[in-house]
Structures are given as structure tokens and as C-alpha cells.
Image 1: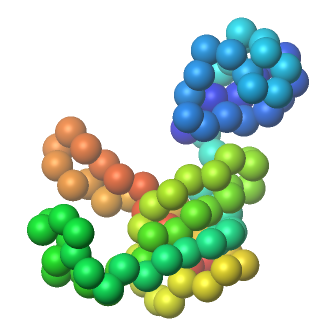
Image 2 (image 1 turned 90 degrees about the horizontal axis):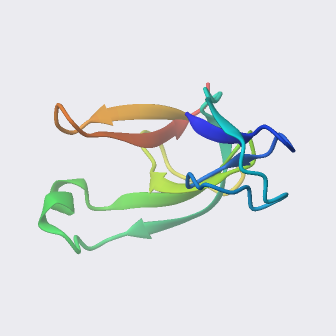
Length: 106
């Protein structure tokens, strides 16, 4: 889900009270396609946090969703490359926390 400004229609992330485009205060939460493109990525060859040790090497990607917002997350499945189409996938880490990650689009 993303916020969308009811005045200019722009999606925004992170959520905010005011639209950064038009300064409008009215917004709504809308479902997203979950589809986007990798704009940049970095492969980590060292576990900077113990929880990531089993995943080394792992990719951190900057994804521009089709709705226009940018997110940083992890890539799952396949080798990351700039320009690749991806789709959101969800990793339920705990009963209270679910992380969005990105897999190659099919």
C-alpha cells in the first residue's frame, strides 16, 4: 500500500502528512502493482549484522515502482542487474513483521 495525494494524484513514500509535489493534505491509501525496475544495486560480501551471515553474498536493490516511488530492499532469486523488471514478494519474518523484497518478474 502507498499513499496517493487526492489533489495531484502523486504516490508517495514514505508516508507523510503533506504531498511533496503540491503540498496538499488530502491523501488515501491505495494498493500498488508491486512491479518495478531495479535502478541500482550493491552486492554485500560481508555480513555487517549477524542475522545476514547465512545470506552472504546478498544484493541490496534500489527499486523504482511503476507508481514512481523508490524503495531499498533485498533481491531474492537470480542475479540483480540495473534495468531488470522485478515484482514484490513478502517475507513474514515474525508474526508481527513482514518485509517486502523483490524477485525477478516473469
